[in-house]
Length: 414
Image (cartoon, rainbow, N blue to C red; front, side, top):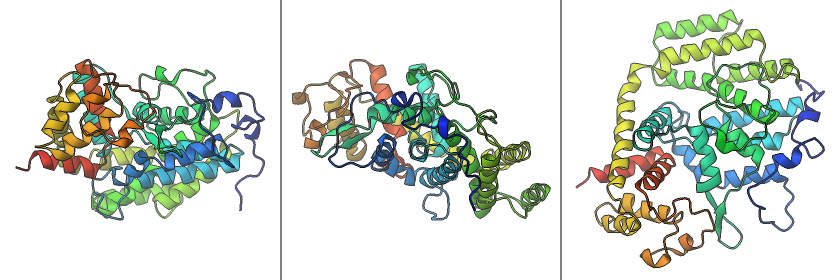
């Protein structure tokens, strides 16, 4: 049975007949056309994200628990799927653009570092120490889809994803850590590079607001299920959860219960006047569950060893790559050092060369795929060490957990 059929947000959604649509579908440059393409701009964004390597790597990135070999523990890709499911269901029932909502949900965590938020904190510390600026995954996600992630066209030429403004905006503004209720889109059409800290601006679209709230709804119950499976919670903790459930006349607090109840509640309470919101009862429940999760899961001492390991892996990869800096000759230096560390140095040399303006004759063994990259050369000629430091952070942030461990093990294998 549908939750509501009136589509009260239809005239406010990102549809061609609504005001401001042309701004929402704007791209940095015109995207190449495909013959007989039946997709609209947001559907095309969705499939471009789906086909990207950054999305594929999410299946081996930690959500909360570093246990990616366990098929039953949530990874970043599964979390993204939950957010897509929750947000598109809400968007459909409220009369918003489902295709835009799906694309934002699909891309919202592309900027996450390996090892979850522990890895994000380490890259933030490194960025502040070596570059004097912070790192947060929302802004890194925008950086990835704008500058780093490349996709081959019909002629095997690699180009940037070049997503629409509305999807890019949803990615950088999705932070779900603040306990907002009654989310409404901002009115200003800003340069998204103006974001300097997490949660600085609300999304520009109602669809972005739906994804922002859905992000919280999707993870709180799933994190509890994983914590129970991995025996992070004591019997007393589980009893506390049971008492919390009974307070809301439920038998359990888990992903299925939370998602079902909160989707129904959001659809029944949201309006253009009130914003995208939960009822006071379910908003309080969501805050209570988040508080429980922070106290007994996210700050659990059992995560300390993992935190130290993530810090060690990321820090050492950064320092070893940083030591190879030789100005405009850095790529050649990386290739020399690939004799010792073939995976780390060789792969990094191939990767960074795609984004450098250095003349082709300075690159030995440059692959055809690297030559056929029509993208912004954001690292110039590596003329300053700060540019190179930023490139290393970019590279590490895109790694999966598995790959970061692989290249770290290369460093300690003699």
